[in-house]
Amino acid sequence: MNYIGSITIDEDLMDAANLIEGERVQIVNINNGERLETYVIKGERSAGGICLNGPAARKVAVGDILIVIAYAYMDFEEAKTFKPMLVFPESVTNRLK
Image 1 (cartoon, rainbow, N blue to C red):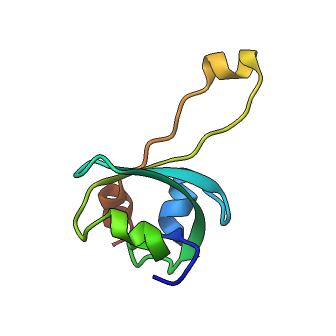
Image 2: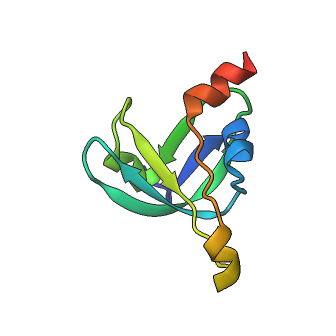
Image 3: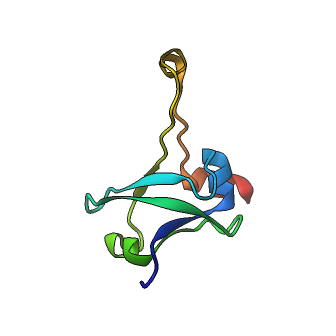
């Protein structure tokens, strides 16, 4: 708990979602409504893990459903055609088996 905080994400999931280490993300906990912002740490590839670290860990329980949101800056024209990327961890980990 004595840590600034972050979210560790399996490197395969990071690749699938186009996230980079150190990127700022918003975490939304579907189970309890908590929201927080933190940064991404690269986790063990193919382990399927997502782990909140430090004080952020108090905002979730094992088994909670989380949404990890990354934002991007872009010009108006690009934004009109931008399609967000959605990644569902079970589909990524099942594909790897």
